[in-house]
Length: 252
Image (cartoon, rainbow, N blue to C red; front, top):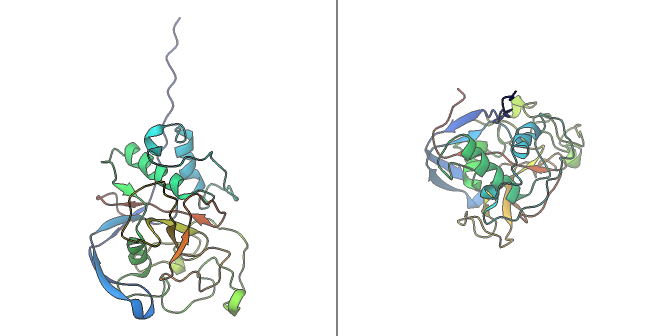
C-alpha cells in the first residue's frame, strides 16, 4: 500500500506594510539639510523578527544559491535574544539581502521588488516630511524608545537588551511606523561613503545603518544620524526591516 507523499507547508512572514507616499521631504542633519523627492514605497511597520527570519532558514535559505548570488554567505547564527517577537539581530548585511531576495520570490513578486531601504527612504519613513529629529518630534522623550537613557541623563530607563517589536507605539513615526529609534540599528542598502551606490557587491565597503540600539544614548537614536558598519559584521544590537517598491498590502 502506497502512502501519500508528505508535503511541508511553507510559512510566509506576515509583514504589516505601510505606504509612504511620493513627494518631497527634508533630509539630512542641521545645516546640511536639503529637500529631496522620492517615489512612493511600502515599508515594514516593524523590524524583521526572529520568527520571520526563521521561516527563511526553515525553507533552506542558507542552502539555496539563488539568494546568495554575489554575496558572502556565512553560517547561520542565532540571535542573542531568541524570543520569536524580538528583532532578528546578529545578521550581517549579506544575510539581510538574501532574506529580501527569498521573500520576493515566495511572494511571487518581480526580482528586486523587496529590498532593504536606502537611507533616504529609511529617513523619510522615520522623520516624515518636515525633518523631525526623532520619529515623534524634535526632543527626546523618556520612555519613547529602547535606549540607554542613563547616558546623558535623558531618563531612567536602560533595559540592557532588545525588546519585542511594537512595545513603543508612543514613539511611532508620522507614518505610524514603529521601533525606528532604539532597540536595534537597521541595515540600509547603500554604501556609507558613496550613498548613491546601492548595488550588491563583495567589496567589503561599509554600508549604512540607522536608528540606534538599546546600547546607545539619545544622540545615537536620532533619525538624522548616519552610521556605518562593514557588511560582514554581526552584532546583537543590529537588525533590519524590509521595503517594497511595488504596491503591496497596506496597513491603514
